[in-house]
Length: 174
Image 1 (cartoon, rainbow, N blue to C red):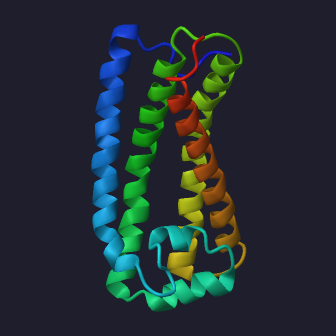
Image 2 (spheres, helix red, strand yellow):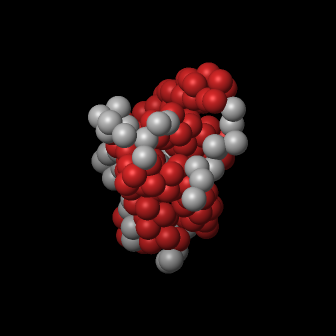
C-alpha cells in the first residue's frame, strides 16, 4: 500500500507540511477564541464536552446551558470545522509522509496506514458534525448524541495515534 500523498514531489513535501501545519495552528487558535462562549458547568470543555456527551440527557443539559449567542458560536464552529478538516488531515498526513521517509519494515507500513487514517478521522469528524448539527437545531434526540460521541472518540483516537506515529518517526532508525 502507498501513502495517500506519495504523489507529492519530494521537494514540495516539507514546504507543504509547514504551510498546512501553520494553517492548522491558525485555525485552532480561532477555535480557541470562541471556546469561552461554550464553556459552562454543563460543558466545562466547551465544544469537546458537546462532542463527547454521548447521551440525550447530557446533550440536552449542554444545550440548556448555552444562551442563543453560544448556540450561534457552536453552529458557526461546526460549519468552520469543515475548513479545518482537510487542513489538519493534510498537515498530519504530510507529517507522516516526512516521518516515514527512508524507513522500512513495520514502522513504514503502520505510518502509511496512518497516512490514510487521518483522512478517515476527517470523515468521522464530518459525520460527528452532522450529528451535532442535528442536536443543535432539532434538540438532543437519540441517536444523534451517541453517533457524535462515537465519531468523536474514533476521530480523536486516529488523530492521536497518527500524531504519535509521526513523532515516533524521529526515534525509529529504519
